[in-house]
Image 1 (cartoon, rainbow, N blue to C red):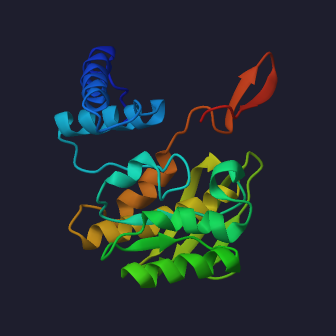
Image 2 (cartoon, helix red, strand yellow):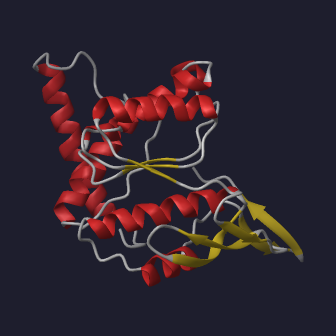
Length: 233
């Protein structure tokens, strides 16, 4: 939390709690099989967040959305980044079916920030949002309200205007796709501010400038050569 990894002692304690609860559910017949590794780790994380009394948690869905372990929570806000073809063995072979699984995270009365999408995916997401009564905040397309400046090291700078403010962003994450992710994050920040969270424009800009994601297009020098590490999950 706040850039600090969970301690080995806390991890072990919460893992024991989750494992014992899992065994009781199986032994009582309430579960036919133990929860999966991902489900147990997600439960472990929830235990840790509760014990530490964190203010806000950013949860990333592990697979799909509708049936993902993280979907048990009641969020302050949801977000859907660009939907593409992935995990077809679980989510389906068509963009519409995958988008439907992603849209399974939407909740009644909970706003959702939606990044630019393929029209087929957007149609599914908007339909689900209308069905459950979720307010949609659309992220502007790259050709609208976005001015991007490229750089030689893959770190992009861009300006972006929402209905509330004009942002000047220097990204510390490589790749043009991060421009879309950052614009999505900007809208999430604004929605959190409406909900009473301390999320000023300056904090959003500073956060995107300082953010670090080890192992994701991370640039290092090795034996006089520039190396990009991109193996983190």
